[in-house]
Length: 107
Image 1 (cartoon, helix red, strand yellow):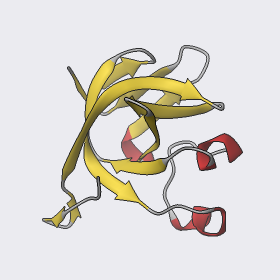
Image 2 (image 1 turned 90 degrees about the vertical axis):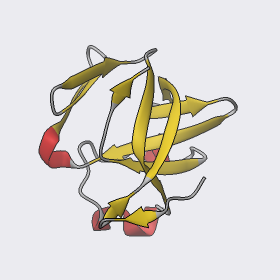
Image 3 (image 1 turned 120 degrees about the vertical axis):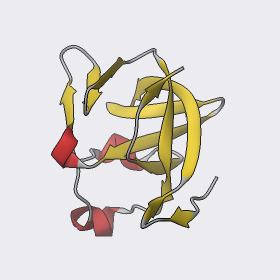
């Protein structure tokens, strides 16, 4: 599940359930969990409610969603290279991959 690049952004789609694993917001797709990263400028995270808001769309842990974006390599040595809505913790680095997204849609 690697991204294709088109029109200057990631152009793949991924569907699954929002979840929390190792104190990290993830998208669960079967047995795979992707840590999720949105652009910080239009995203907010309310950890006390487990609610993410991207633009005008709100979703909470347990919701089935579709994300536009793509998988990107993130390692402990390049975390400062990305514009995080919420900086990843060590639990995020334990997930199967990072999914960088620019959209959120309910299924």
